[in-house]
Length: 400
Image (cartoon, rainbow, N blue to C red; front, side, top):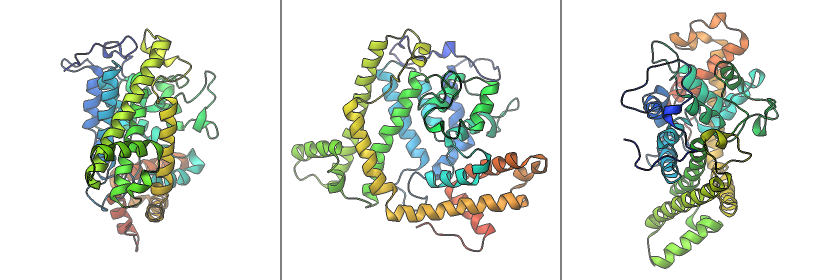
């Protein structure tokens, strides 16, 4: 069902989509962007998110976030932001649903390990891998590989954090040193995603939704895991203010309910700030089309300055108290070793790969073989990676 709120002129219009790489008849019942959402939900890579790590490995407990639960939370926040800014909710949701499909097992530890394994062949980048998943690695349709998503969804997945290059093709930001990943460059030869521009407003709010979800839910998971205490997070400015207000309003409230209320209010506060700041930027820019948002000199989807500072303070706290906690680092170092072992084994003994992955390897050059092996490993869930390691090696860490 279409939203009862009319789209703003700067929203992406599914009726005016730039289309798909492979032409298809339009759906009779769904918009182009709704169709993208549905294809992502039914993808094999989406189902695997259930058993991929956020911070904690799969068997540490049933209540911690996985890539799947995180993705659903980002989708909910993305739709909320899109609705209030009169953007296309389906496109914002599609981008949220697909944004983590390229992550390998064991979270950022797995990504760092694969990046090191592929250092001689362009490295590994989860955004580039997401593009590979939705344009090549999913094998569901008789006429094409991938999901054949719309141009707007693909550009949003690639550029949700901003332009990758300038107008002349010079890499920017995180890609300045090593260049834009080859999978993105190669795909753009077929289907130009205009790497020099910002993405749509929908992609920008989906990216901020990811930040909001991380801030709120990593606080929740970190407290649940006892990596830090409520008093520790109460020393961080923005959560401190919220906790103080909750305690004043509900004297004697138990800590479990207090944490739930903290998370609820923090998400609401961050959403309200993004809406207010983004609406102000849109009013100043006065874009008459989605392309005018893309061609703007600065992003429109953003926290305000003060809340942006508060967001950075939360992330700094989580980096020190959670992501680099000795307990987490120990497990993730072991997990990275599992990925390195698997890559070395498959690279030197390709017969250990499943038949459908080992066929045709002999005809590939060294770089293509390495990328092929990385594709297989990146698609693994945490538990499958551990099972494969146990099958191939005498000793496998328990990751606890």
